[in-house]
Length: 111
Length: 111
Image (cartoon, rainbow over all chains, first blue to last red; front, side):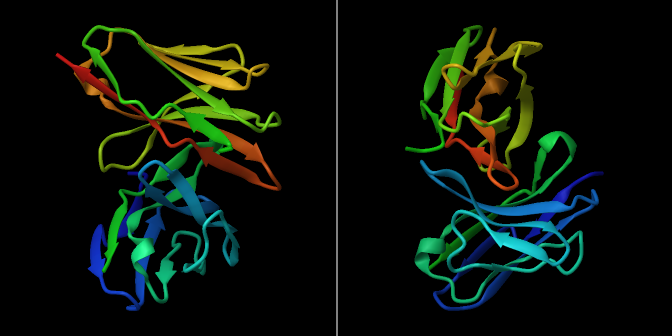
């Protein structure tokens, strides 16, 4: 089954404690993205990757890092999380025809 | 001004009603347009693409007005299961093909 997986699905953490959210897709897509979704603001792109070892900033990259060492994986790293990074995060990969396949989401709370 | 704007709603309609959503975009060079559906706390999923000549998929009709820079989604004979948030998506031509999401319009269909 074609899918994008994310882990963990829910995470409560404290300010400053480094965390990684994993993302994996099994569709051999080259283009992958991370978004955050906040009420009233919609989906905003954090980082994207056009292919292995090619990543670039989206609209709201501050406080985040990514890596793309393999085509299928695109982890999101928060080196020092802060409360303003409390949000719902989606990983996505882009298929033919510009259909974006989303992971199930990670709800992050930073206290 | 946001690149993609939608009326947030909520639109509360009875079963069987016809409801229409509009979405405006600011970049006149935008080439591709989509509607996504997002159920509460779930990931967005592609509902339909929007073609220049307009297109229909069962009870759903999408239209594009390039002159006025808006797209619309019409839902006929609303069902309870149509209750969701509908996201307007525009492909922005900015060095790479970037998907810009509207904040979404919430629809609630009641018995």
